Length: 486
Image 1 (cartoon, rainbow, N blue to C red):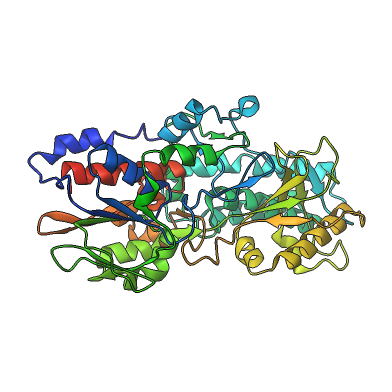
Image 2: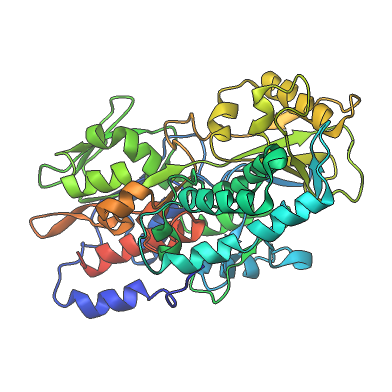
């Protein structure tokens, strides 16, 4: 991805800019909305700076937010965030120091479904020549689009650009009789974009590629061992005692109209007043509740940014079996329904794309959902998902002995009003309107004092979408209160 240099140290810049600004007194009561990575990072940083009257209000019964490790066998399945983007960031350093980076595969290569793994196409035969021709066409496109991102019209979508290139490919191939095969390969190729960016590629702007920047010279994703984000979550929570975290405490209104900030909980309870509140709610939650969550209402600029920046979803399915039914050397199973090939293939077959055995437990198959699939699968019961996924395996692999999974482990991110999806991106509308993550991050200042501050992945200008952006943004807002840098 295009790189724009390493991220600057916020606290260093803030110290130079703050001058005589008025920092928040150390005895000031501070509320934090949300106990995800941003909220925990903010609380930990505030406490280390000497602020002891800090309270986190968390709507769920757990901490972590979109980091959601659950105990399984002798490790943790990651229902939420799983990888670390790049090396030059605090999350990578924490994971390295905790010895949870995957030693045998420290750098996660991009798995190209066009070149790697099984193509499960049911009754249809996808020849190696067709696969090679499509791979030769599609493989250079990601680099091409990334190079285009820094020039020309950044409001164009990836889907728009691909459609133009695809039509030229079909014309050059004289592939009328093979179009259904290439259409199926296009769906598989598209899924890799939409899983990477949590976005419909028809809404994913070129500006998104230009803005995202891990600060590394190369784009890398790093995997972790079976402890994964559980270890990282525990580490960043170390400094925050449990008595400072109020679970099952959903905030429904933040009133900053007076000298102090009042919050109201879903239960109707109004806790003590606060001098400042750091809001770490997901962009998906803000899209649905921003107009009722704040009194007075947010500025038009901030609401426009919330409304127009993208917030999509990827989904994960962990299918648990008594024993593996796939061969020991299976790396990836790519589902490839081809129109007109497999009889009795329902529309749900196209919801599934890529599955792979989980690295540290042989009895678990992990599936990835992208585009419209997460919402569609989230609307289904576990039994319905078991039936659908077993059916597609049997049809596409032509093996009616494949068993149903004994369990399905997942989280329904799209239907949870506290999240509304998984993470943010720069949409076509945002690119056209000039909406930015900085506009969401700007604090609300009343009488020279920051009253409402904003953190979370969708408030970081460079590494939005990531646990890195969430963590850095939480510390950023704590430093802002300490330094008085509004």
